[in-house]
Length: 239
Image (cartoon, rainbow, N blue to C red; front, side, top):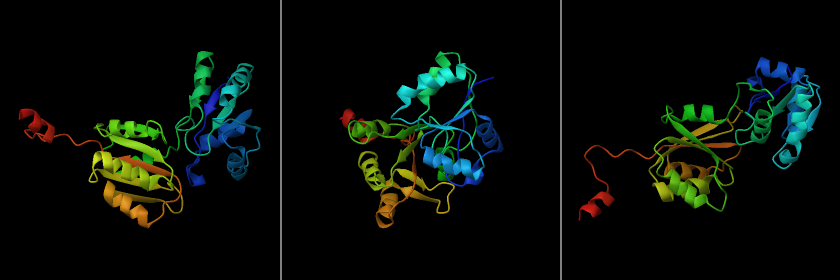
């Protein structure tokens, strides 16, 4: 049966590609790629020669209808992003929604997603967490950070290496420099690294060592007040 497959691709090492993902890409009538140049490297590595069509955040509003029509006409379409699982901070949601609304079958293969290894490597609680993706760059950024300061669950944030230190300093200003954080970069690549510590410590580290590559920030949630203790606001209210 024709359907839409969402196919995760490696975030680093190409050996992380699953056998099933390779098979689906080889059997698909059409591969939708966020960047055809990036995906062509992956396809060449696994000797996949299927047709590709560009599908990214700048054109997806215009292309989703046509893709749905092709699937309804009998084609099997596979969607990939540059790295990781499509629709996770990458194009994909709009197409999936359009397929669901039109009764087109959708199947997402399990596979690589950068935040999972970063979360597990962090050493921070991972039984409950919230994924925030990329924070607003300008408008609404401070408001969002203030909201996150009250979040009790472990938080996952994606960030550019060029804004990493600034982001850590902004978190420290609102949440306190002793809030624990873990920063993972270049996951599954040769220079993979995870730096853990307080916000002040990790920010200072990356001020001395310029960060490069894809960045995942794992930030500890707001500590719960110890039983029987009051914070400053409670004491002020008592007065």
